[in-house]
Structure formats: C-alpha cells, structure tokens
Amino acid sequence: MLAEDYLNMRNEINEKGIIFSFSGYLSEGILFALGDALKKKLSSDETDANTVKRVFSVFVEQTQNIIRYSAEKLVAPNQEILAVSSGVITVGFEEGRFFVACGNVVRTEDVQQLRTRLERLRSMAPAELKAYYLEQIREPPESGSVGANIGLIEIARRASEPIQFDFTGIDANTVFYCMKAFI
Image (cartoon, one colour):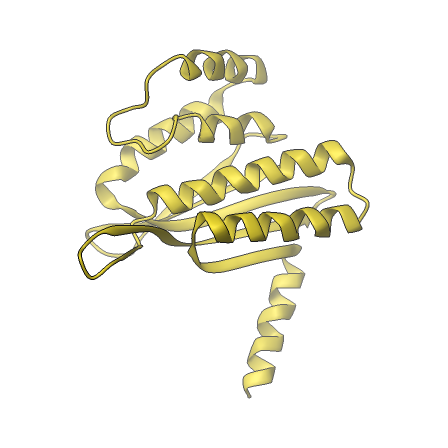
C-alpha cells in the first residue's frame, strides 16, 4: 500500500504538469540547492535561456517569501526564531507555459494587507509595474519587513499574465496563502 500511495501521489503531480516540487521546511541553503536542481532540470530540457532566468527568478522570490513570512517557523529552545520556515513551492508546465506556485501559512491579521498588495499588483500593466518597482527601490523597507518590499513586484513583472492568489482559513489565527505566476 505504501508504494501505491506514493505512486498515486506522483501520478497526480505529473497530471497537474508539475515538474519540480518541494514541501517542507525551507532555509537559504535549501533554496540554493533546490535552485541549482531547478536550473539543471530546465537546462536539460533545452528551455530558452531567458525563460530559465525568469522562472528561476520567480522561484527564488517565492521561496524567499516563504522563508521570511511563513507563520510556521522553527524555533530554537531559547525561543530564537531560526531562518527555517514551512511551505510548498512548485514549478510546472501548463498550456504551453511554465508556472511557479507557492503556498504557506500566514497570520490572519496579515491577510488583508497582503491581499491589498497583490490585488494592486494584479491590476497594473507592465509599464505601471516597472514604474512602481523603480519607485519602491528608492523607498525604505516597511516596518516589520525583512526584505526590500520588491519581491512581489518582481514576481508580477516577470509573470506573463496577472498573478493568481488565494487564501483559505485554517483556524482563527492562521490562513493558508497560495500564489501562482505564469511565465
């Protein structure tokens, strides 16, 4: 039964066009190793170099967002938060184009701000995204942010169509967030 369960899971993943997937705890070191494997896979498929670069860039941004913002983080016995967070990241091929999708748990209190930011990005034309990006790189990071606040903009800029996203409640304090970008 064990082999059959995992074969069924593998077949379902393949049916969804997923060529690369990771679910679990991520760190910068794991990001580096996964990124290397992804580049090798795409290159072995003789994917256009520009497409490889765009897919890889979105993959890195989404994985860094999981590491930085997932509500599921490993905590050391001394209560120090480690740079290891839980999430899922996939790369696939659907309808003749690549996609990168990620998901992780976020705090309920952070959902509205994230949703507002994503809706704004989704509504922008490419020229607006470029101008917004240039504006944001000159601004100081928002309070509580661990990045430069340009990761989501980068994803939207590299996507071939508006990004998709969704939220589903887990409990009163947490929500599962998912984003998908076609390249």
